[in-house]
Length: 259
Ligand code: F6R
Image (cartoon, rainbow, N blue to C red; front, side, top):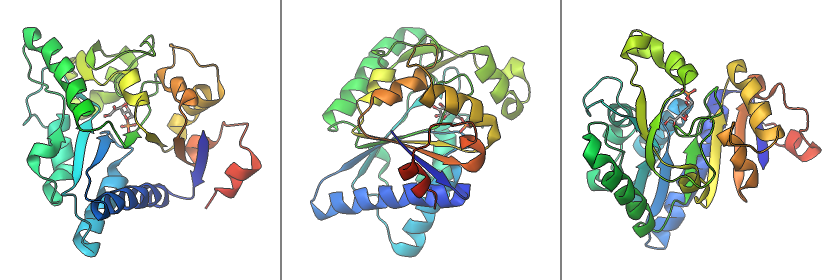
């Protein structure tokens, strides 16, 4: 695992955006698509803003990009103000030239009897796109990646899950109260995420410091699904000083990564 401690969220986000730009441009030069796994939430906001800027000011094209989002709340239609469908369109998709048919987001409005076919189809669509080249992740205070909450198995695939009470509590503000936060979601599984060729996890602010230290310096265990990332061959953990402040084992080369 590589840790990068950035002086600001904007700097860190810019570095990840540059990596995405390089992948997209290398793909375009070779005439192939680039498959991105995307996250929602506050952590990638600056990243998406920077990608939109690169599109507008530098002409970065997303025509050869295929995206798969990590998750969606179950019970929310696309137009719900808190749906991840809406979030992704407002923050990124509406502002770049990514063709709509190349966007994949789990369905929030599926009926109970449609969910398992949908999940199988989502896995199949990722496979037939050639697998995920770069997966963007945030981390929840429960240690979740996607909505793989404590107890999620290392081999899990896209599935219907129950949200942890802490995750629902963290989302309550945006929903106007805990009672309005969905209890379930559809999420890519841990194995789906770990199959990505490269992973960039973003965590900003002191509120993430404890779970960052536990997930990436602690034991690999299913109580902290993000800890599985320790076993992936190509993961970069992008932090600011606040989120990194409880890490004890930053090696000299990691300190050199401090920009
Ligand atoms: C979002 C997702 C979640 C978030 C995590 C952190 O698609 O899968 O795992 O990345 O809950 O959320 P923020 O970034 O809001 O702190």
